[in-house]
Image 1 (spheres, rainbow, N blue to C red):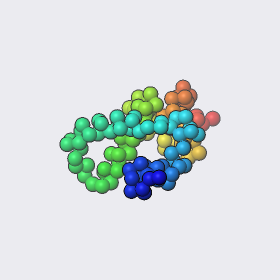
Image 2 (cartoon, rainbow, N blue to C red):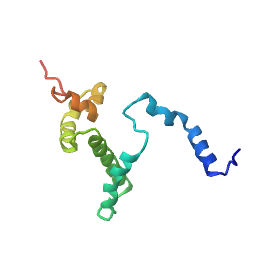
Image 3 (cartoon, rainbow, N blue to C red):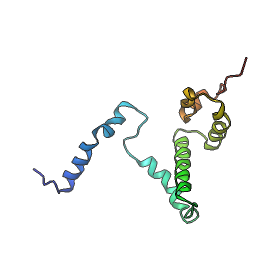
Image 4 (spheres, rainbow, N blue to C red):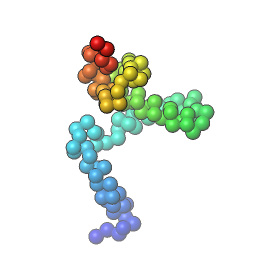
Length: 121
């Protein structure tokens, strides 16, 4: 029997409160059980912290965080972030919303042998 103030009891309660989130990795093999890869990606952010201290605004900080996330996702999927972002930014305006999933790094790698935008007949 544990006191609810015990560290182990708190950890168990935390786990049980987000059971769906915790077990999501069982349904999708691409999801990692640990956050080690995310923490590794954050090290580069920490290294540049002084240079990036002033991003101009809260919105600028949110945009920077989104870009770090996109670049990190590309790297984790073995995709060159510059090539991927360049191709995505060039083709996204002409791509129907129903096909936006094709721009995800793992899909982009699989489909990049064919053009993302169908040529008009």
